[in-house]
Structure formats: C-alpha cells, structure tokens
Length: 361
Image (cartoon, rainbow, N blue to C red; front, side, top):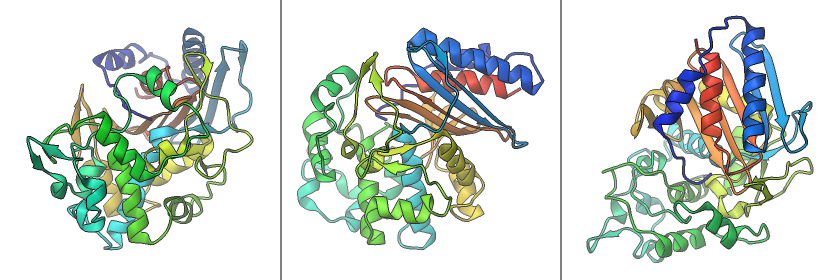
C-alpha cells in the first residue's frame, strides 16, 4: 500500500516470461507453474484470476506454507493501494457533476489553516495554496509522506497493532513530523499516500457523505460488488491472514483510509477493473481521459496518471499493506488480471510482470 518501487529488472522479468505457447491451455499451464514457483520461492500463498477478452475465466493458487494448491478463491484480502483507483474514480465522478475540477485548489475546498501549517514549507516559503486536485491524483503535489520511508519493518513495529485508530488529521500531523516536502507542487513526481488522504477529505466535503458511504453508493453497489469491505468498518469472516516476512501482520485500516483501506476478493477486483476500463463508472470521455491523459514518468517506461499506473500500455494498480500485496490490471489485449499475495514483503509487481508476459504475445 505504501511506496511502489519500480525497477528495470521487472521489465527484464516480463520479457523472460514471454513464452512461445499460443494455446489457452498452454498459457494457463505456464501461469500455474509461475504462481506455484513464485509462492514456493517466497514462502507465501498466492491467488490469481485471469478474465480473458473472450470471457474465459482462469484461477490459479498455491499455498507454500501448507504445500498445497488453493482450490477456492472467495477469500478476502487487503488490497491496499488498489483502493486508490476507487478514490480517484470517486473524484472523477464529482468532476463530471461539476462539483470541482482538476485545477481546483485544495485549500479552496478545505480551508483548514491549522492542518496545513508547516506542511508544505520549502526554503521558507509555504506552497500549500498551489496544490490542485490534479496534483493529488497523479502524485505531483510534493506533499510529505506519513509513513516511514524505506523501512517497512520499523513501520510495522511502530504501527502494526490492528486496534490502533487514526483520523485523517492525525495522519497529516504524522507526515509533518516524519518527512519533508519533496518538491514544489507540479514540479515532480513522488508516490505519496498523504495526497490520497486529502482526496478522501475532498470527497466527504463535496459529497456531504462519509468516504466509505460515497464509495459504497456510487461504485460498490452499482457494480454489485458484494464482497468488498471497508477495513475501518468491518473485517469479513473469510479474510485471509496477512504476513510480513512469514510472521502474521495486520495493518490498522484507518492508517490507510482513502489511500488503501479496502478489503476484497479476486472476483470483485476483476469486476471493478473491467468496469473502470469500460466506462461503467463515468462517461466514455472521462474514461478516455483516465486512460490517456495526465500521466507522469515513473521511470523504466512506467507512468502514473489519475489514480492509475500504466505499465507498457497495461493499466491498473498495485497495493501493499502490512500483511498483503495485490495487483489489478486491464491489459492491452483485453484480458484483465487480479492477484493477491498474503505477505507484504513479496512483490506483486514482479509477479504481475510475469503474468502479463505470459498473456501478452
């Protein structure tokens, strides 16, 4: 859920997995092997769903801890930053309703001087008034991160108690204390959860609804996503256990909130990414903008737009919490994929590249 580290090695990994098989059965055999090998190598449990462009459904899963194939795929997992696509979609719905626009200033919507104090001061100048909705969506705000950077183990030690509760305002205060602004608004790119906390507050302010209630009413219910939950409200009974380096680990949902609190299943994740692509949540014009505009370079041919990653023309998002990693994607060939890993230290991006490499010929 926190930072997404993209390396050129991932592109190489993708290329190495572009096998020559052409039949669906051969491709699925390769995916089964890939999932099993990756789970064994990383001592984790992995589940994968592929929804092909011709509506064939393929599931694969292996639990290396139990040394057995996974046969049922209805368990829920924390999807972490994949939730950002839900938050961004909610903002774009409000933009379509002309409640705000991408150039609307954050401080004009939420004029909270106490919360902003000392948050965006660079060389003695305060740049808070320059941050726009667009900057928040595509991580060009320069806001400081409220998580510890590059130290997941220490972060989990400090905040790995699921009974902890945080307000959005407390998360902003944490950002002030832990990190400095990265750059002036609009002058760079840095993945930042703090911006998506502000987007959650914007949704609440503009819609007059709680964040979870808005997403439920305008995304989950219309798409009949009956197995997606908000961690701040409930943990479903069939939720898998999460881990970090093999040890059971849980993240306080309120620490993620609008940046990553959702809990879901492979099927619901797939329902969402296909609806997102097929303009079932907003107009075709907005869908096209989401898929083609406002992207910033993340390096290695990967870009980030309005709550979506573009990986060599395959679009979606990765997620990480203290106990899980996940990925949802709509591929350039019309297939969609959703995957979950029950260990936060195991890269979903690396596995996603391998899956994409098998499916894109």
